[in-house]
Length: 218
Image (cartoon, rainbow, N blue to C red; front, side, top):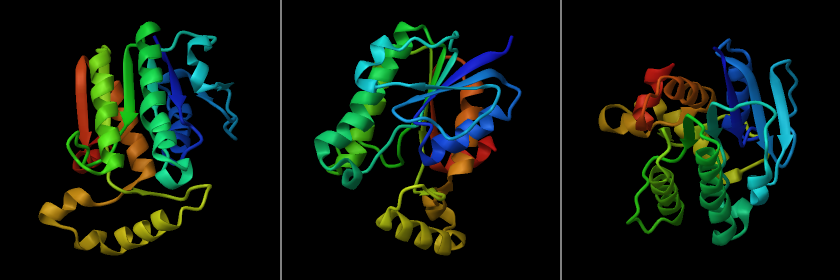
């Protein structure tokens, strides 16, 4: 029996790539995307829902959802404040996790970040660590957490510092060998592929996919 997937954050860099990969795969009967804006993509197996995450409890898809992919993420600059950033990267993700639990979703995959730690002074990495711990505590049947390094790819919106980071990362990637290899940037296409492959191979419990292991899922 074919399954149905649901993607949150499908308009972002990795979310868009994941949407493309899933609809062109024969694994899913339908690929559903939910967000505040519509995905500029059409396909017979694709269904878009306009959803306000603040009121996610009212969201009722037209089909049974088996797998959920969470590709939400912002930056402190784009969010405008730490509180606004935390709302997207922690509160909304937790809302989705609890919704998935209530809907008896079998498998959930989420994008986190390399270097997460609950004890770090870095607000971004600490928030990601708290998000991971929060999802684990929900006790979903199967949870996949991916921890990529810098994401490489073309975004719709311009992020100057991220652009500089991508240029530097691409230039020095071939020189990052040995222990440094684990810090290499990852293409959004490869991250999306790893997210898909890791989730469909997940059984029970929590699976952690570190940055250096993303290439194993291609």
